[in-house]
Image (cartoon, rainbow, N blue to C red):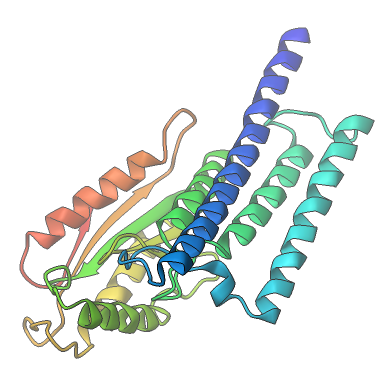
Length: 279
């Protein structure tokens, strides 16, 4: 019994440490943005890094601020419920306790909601790499817990990276992002600007068939676009798509699905025309 309690305590500590790490990363990101905004104000200019998130305060209106406060309150309430439950014995610490896991997932969701306010790509309106990384950790842990498949799609418009005109490049990224709203249907699916010219779509509880449908939809939507500066192939705007479908096991790392999806994406880029490659 003592051994089980020690194991549960260790597992509980790991889970709470994950929440603490996410909060720490969120605060660090927010502070960095405030420092960046202050520096730019002093210099009288703006950063040349187009992939950076702009000053948060400049993007948030009154409704955004109200939503932010609401999410913060939900987070505080959920943490308080967990603490009271642990103190009164209503929760059994450990990754095998359903109520404890529900509390953890609720607080993790709140952290991601809060992070969304500081991890939005200002150009496309999508999440940036910071937000994607946090979401991947959450969905990976859920997939491990529920023994469900998780799919990752990495893609880009062929030739976009070679466009050196920053205004034209940014205009294409925004147009493609708007078009992607037709491709990503489920509210649980998550799409991000993964790099300067690449996108990533994270699809929870999605097997090969579902991932194929989304990837094909992306290929059709982008293929039908007329994009100035991007040469069509066989009458379609070319897009390279890499897909990895994986049911993670305890002990595996989220970086595995990233590496496999990116490898498939690189293979797709080496083939002419719109191509979907599965890892």
